[in-house]
Length: 319
Image 1 (tube, rainbow, N blue to C red):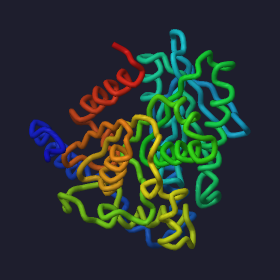
Image 2 (cartoon, helix red, strand yellow):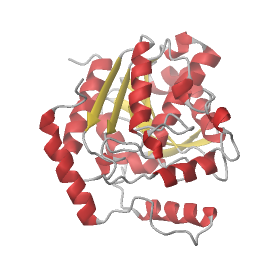
Image 3 (spheres, rainbow, N blue to C red):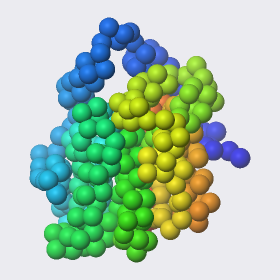
Image 4 (spheres, helix red, strand yellow):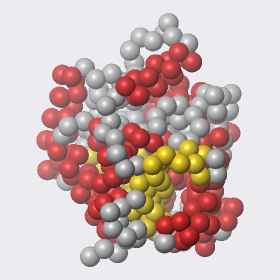
C-alpha cells in the first residue's frame, strides 16, 4: 500500500538536502554541561526570540483561570476551533501559531481559542491535560452564549495534537459521547501519542539517516520532565498515551506526519486504530519530511495547507 504519491518524493529529497546544508539543530548538540532546568530555559528563550508572525487582532484572556489567545473571524462565527500549541510539553506558547490560526479563522469563519497550558517540569502531568479539559468543558457550556454557535473543532501540532486527542478522550469518558458529538473534527498534526516510545521514537524510521529536528534522546528528555519517575506500564495508561485508549465514538480526524519524523509511528498507529474503531479518518504522509516540516520552506508547506484546508471544508460541510 502506497502511503503517498511518488510525485512527492522529489520534494522530500530537496528538503533533506536543504536542512543538511542549513545545519539546523536536531537536539543532539552537546548540551551535556547544562542541567535539565537550564536546557529548558534555553529552549524557551530560543522560541521566545524566534520572530513568529503575530496577529495584531488576537486577544489575551483567561478561561477558567487558564491563559488563552483568542481570534475571531471577519465574518459571522460558524464554529470554534480549540487549539493547543507544540513544544514538547516543556516550552512554547499560543502566539507561535498566530499565522496558521488566523488563516483558519478568516478562511473558515472560525473563532480560535489557543490555550497557554501549564508546562513541565514546573507542572508535570496531569497539569496540561487538566488545563485543556477545563477550557474544553467551558466551551461546551458557554460557546453559544459567547460565540453564537455550538459547533466545535479541536486540534494542534506535536504536543498540541497529543493534548487535543487526550482532551477528546477525557470528554468522552467524563461527559459521554454526546459531548464528543459537539466536535466536528480533530486536526492532529505530527503528534506524540505514545509516551512509552513507539518504534520510530526509538530511531527506527524508513530513512534512518535523514535529518529530523527531534531525536530519540530529546524525546526521552521531554518524557522525563513531563512524566517524571513514571514506569513504562504507567506511561501506557490511556489517560497518558491515547494510542492505548478505546477509540470508539470519536470525531472525524485529520492526521499528518513526515516519514522521517521520529513520531511517524505515533500517527500511523493512532490513525489506523482511529479508523478501525469506526471513526472517519484522513491521513497524509509526506516523504522524508522531518518533525514540524511546515516550519521549513518547501513545496510541502502549500501542499499540506491545501490538504488540511480540504479536510476543514469537508467537516464544516463547505462546498
